[in-house]
Length: 490
Image 1 (cartoon, rainbow, N blue to C red):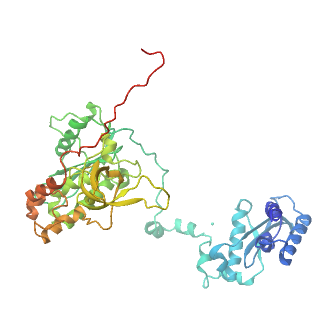
Image 2 (image 1 turned 60 degrees about the horizontal axis):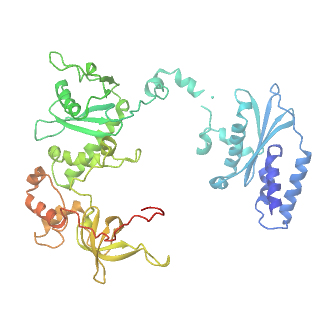
Image 3 (image 1 turned 90 degrees about the horizontal axis):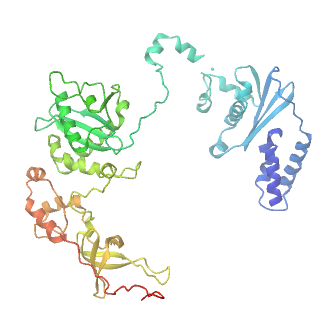
């Protein structure tokens, strides 16, 4: 079989000089046994004869070209002729859905493949196309046109007519497509800031606009509720950022005159080392901040809907939304915006980074570090007693207690796992003394508590009763380390 594969490779190398190569080698390719069957042996001998008898001439571009195309059930092929002699061959097997094409479309596929193969010879010149099926002629009939053929119909006259038609030019304008621009990328935090407004928005206060400021390097968002879009308001918001993080190198915005405040004492930012860059009003010119405007507003609407609040209360949930966006892992940088901007991890708004199943005592799965064979289970079920972000106290089935790392724990399907975002709805349905509800930890801002008439003391008591304020004391070894004895030392 190895010799057969080498022979197939040899034939494939000379395929461009063998007419109908794909059809002829088909019985040989499908052969899986040796010695060869009669059809495979006949194909092998025929290919050898074709390889010996084939004669080609070089291409003379001063002579007209003639393209002869044909198709079979499994392959398409074509011959490029000049002066009644072949100068090139082409063939390929049909793949996938092409095998189910009707005969007329297989013939059309042969024509398309041939013209595409020799386009460097046939482009911008007249040539003769020969096919052995008269049914292909109906493709040129405008009343009986198949969908697959029409997509290859030349359009080399339609474009010329449309370009000279005033009505077509107005209804189907051909806009200019400039070359791809080079995106200026920031190399460190506070190098380039993008700013934009969103609004007007419904509000219970005087703030009807949102000013979004994005650090282009870290994608860290700053958001300010604003009563208007005046330059004084913009400068006041930016000054609060600059006083904390320093002056940026560039500020990118649209054509609005945010920084021109005649008659005021504000020093222009250009005199303080900050350059202003403007783009057109097209959203693509300031795409990063436009995108974050949508993300922040969608998050606001989502949390408002979750808490049955009206859109006018968007300022109440804005801090929580910003915390979520700043803590979201970015797949492009593999870091959160907070980590990329401040270079340290952001703590959770709940004061810890524990999932809900570690906040409630119950069954959990503990990693088994020692196994006598690979068939033993990877984990053992133990009873969780309490946990902090680093360590947890667990109780084994035999009564032993131990301190383990939280990295070795996993949730058990038998445990009562209550997601944090469902705790509020459970508190409304259950009494304060119901087990399992107070065990879950949550956090609600004072404004939301006023809107939903929740008792803040209940939340604080629940949090303090089940999350230890200090890490659990670890058991350490009592072995004393002695220095090694060296030869010749006193």
